[in-house]
Each structure stands twice: as structure tokens, then as C-alpha cells.
Image 1 (cartoon, helix red, strand yellow):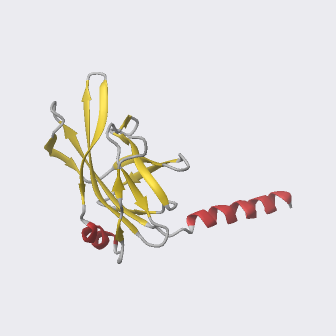
Image 2: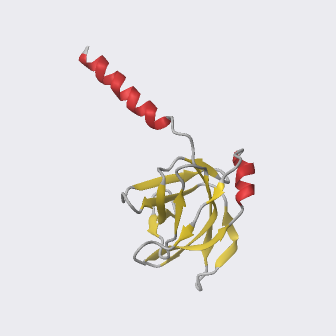
Image 3: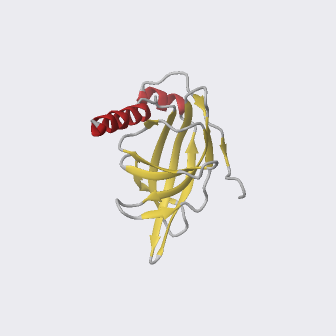
Length: 159
């Protein structure tokens, strides 16, 4: 009887967290950087990206796996900064020039498309935010969402 009660409570908690509707639209493209940290155009990828966002207030890190051109996710309202980027399935590198965006508490926030470049040179592995595209209507169309608002982009606090 005790296990059944625990199991029901567990299902209730899990179901409550799964029931949250996506409130953030975002797309990540990745490119390789040359020795002058400029994107190598032929290596532009739109799929299979993984990156980490950190909530500035709570310091909680959220890993996002993007398998398509864009993704609709749920993030608690607040300010999120790019922390790191996976250049392979197991290799995570810090983003050297992080930027942040605001997730609204009363609308769907549209962060647009972020282009992250990575470079591996000997023992120097790093990533840079190369570009931010304000293709908001394109993301709405890809994800079948209407009436999103552009997310406010800013530099992290203390930078």
C-alpha cells in the first residue's frame, strides 16, 4: 500500500512537470571556425546540436538537444545565458562570448536562430556565438506557433 501511494505521488509530480506547454522558440546552427575565428561556410549544420543554458537567477543549467531546424521548449520565466556547446556527443566546450535572452512569463518568447562556431586547435577547444538571426516568423512557421514575441538579448550580468 505504501509503495502504491509513493508511485501515485511520483506520477503526479512527473505529470505536472511534463504538462508545461513550450514557451520558448529557438534554433541553433553550428559552424566550424577557421584559424581567424571566421565561419567555414561549407560546415554549416542545422541539426543535431546540443547546448547548455544557465538561468542567471537560480544558476540551474538546462541541456537542450535540438534534432531539427528549430525547437519549442519550456523554460521557467527568467534570464538565460548560453553556457557551453557540445562539439561532439561527449565533448562539451565553454562559450567564450556568452549572450543571454529573456523568457517572458506571459507570452511565447522567440529567441530566433543562434549560430555557434567551434574550433579545435591542439588542446584549445572553444565555442563562440557568431551570429543571432531575428528570423522570428520563420521559426513560428517551422514550429506551427503564432504570436510569439522576440526575446530580449543582452550580455550576462557582470560581463
